[in-house]
Image (cartoon, rainbow, N blue to C red; front, side):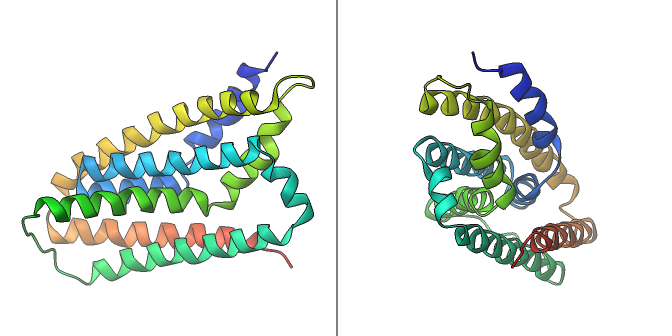
Length: 208
């Protein structure tokens, strides 16, 4: 029998600890409203599902033969988080520009929000370690491995999606307050610093 409650007890603190995906969901919801935040959340959790499928179908075992893949993943995560952080800092210097969006532009921005969330989680080595190392430990010997991993992934994604949704809605509410330039600049500055700090944290984990 799968230790569901034990898995939830271990996973909940990880979900509730603000990380790269939470920061990007909040950032996009403030910049583009609830829709952008929710699409970012959907993208982030699609990244989690990708790792669940990779774990279930043996990618975790493959990494034991090619450990250098971890190094590539970590450096990619550092580069991506640094890029997002720099973009936020650059916006501090730009005046807010209000312009109506055409349907095609709105659709394109929605795809960008989804892609940003997906890339953030796929390039997050902590999430990779969670799925490739921790999740398999909760699969009892003799249980169907793939279905067990997918069940545990469903629990994690349900918790994470609820958490991200709350941040997306909170960000959309804050966007009304932060429509003025100075508060918006302060938040962009704080977000940029936070993302760069997360990149630095990942960088410290990059070993030879």
